[in-house]
Length: 416
Length: 170
Image (tube, rainbow over all chains, first blue to last red):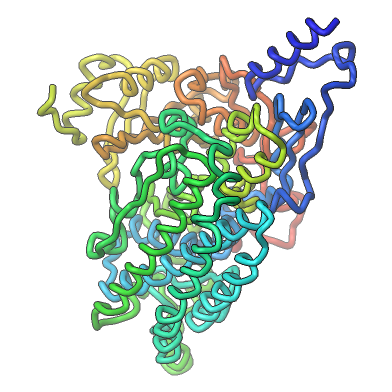
């Protein structure tokens, strides 16, 4: 009697995630249970479902359902003028929306071959690295929460607020920022921004080191996260992993250093890599990346060049309001931009930036019309979340929850 | 082969030597080598790019569909963005085929990560991938009976008359 149960279990363990598990009613004798992890469960940190088949605590197989918050961004984008697509990108990875915004703006700038002032590059670097810190803080503190350590989470979220205050100072919004314009920024950094940034750079490292000392060398945390949800470097590459999750597996691929954009080549920073690709390595890689981001911000804030905060792109960049009411040409441009009547070359362009979760790409096909003919987002979450069943098969449910949070799967980016 | 440097010309030369008949056209928009290839040969070509020791273009960045309703006989397309992380070289492959029989070879056997991207392409464009282990919809609901990213489906209710497409994008 027990033999065929064992056989059934081993066949389930071997079963590929992409095939429907071979589980018929007759073979279940009560040992194997089905457990719904999600779609709305506090432990999933987002709306996605995992149907786990478990033997006690052990996961035998898992089936994913995604698409709960699909909003058809790619279709929406086919009907919007280029400057109106920036708010859509906010809602991809909403933990670091400025990176998405700026990535999109740079894609259009690449298409129209705009020349961007150096000052804009540096301003963008500051904003993007702040967003990266905010993104990694959320992910790492949530890994802490899932191991039962709530303290770090509440502690660093205060610092995350300060980052959002900085965004607010630049663009008026906090979470879905719609920051910047095609060609630069809406306005220059204000003195308040510089003051707040200085304060942040002064106070944050201390808080961050305290957070780090709460978890990084904490025996319980280490025992809990090491060997949880590991993936090898080769397998990660086959799955299309990017960003911190790939680097935790030992592959040092970072778009910022490999295809530098926005003057990243000017800055001195290192790309941290892990060894085992497990939850602990992912945590440590993100911790180190926060430190490196701070280094970049310090360098950028120190060396920020003089110049304009916007490129000379009258076709895309709204003229100042006082001119619109007094100057014929400014009024015409204002009207043309608002109505989406800007000339755009036909062509296709792929541009990628290093988002919070890795290579965030934009594949834009333009036929010269007022809207993109086709816009496809390379959403890192969507691509690497496929590996999740493979990573958790054979582990316990609590490790599965931990693996999910350490992968930093953001539902907005997953479902687009 | 150790002093082989990858740039648009050398890669195109090397691919042409092996797949000369499969390449329909080549261009380099914004300095990215873009090849239009025979739909039937694309699987072999991607396999060659991955396994060739000189090229090692072995990272699938992006896979997606596109619809050109006016290109009769070649309405649907699939784009592959591939990346050689070792040489830091990117390449884009494109295939076009008829909407009557939208079927291409799956590359899941080469890249596991293509699985969901191919399902997404099926979901939105109705392109079927032969050899895919689970060719079902992924983001849309299972009983949807059309492919929404095709151009004939308007974003808004197509029966509306108060909105003129000329004034609101396409």
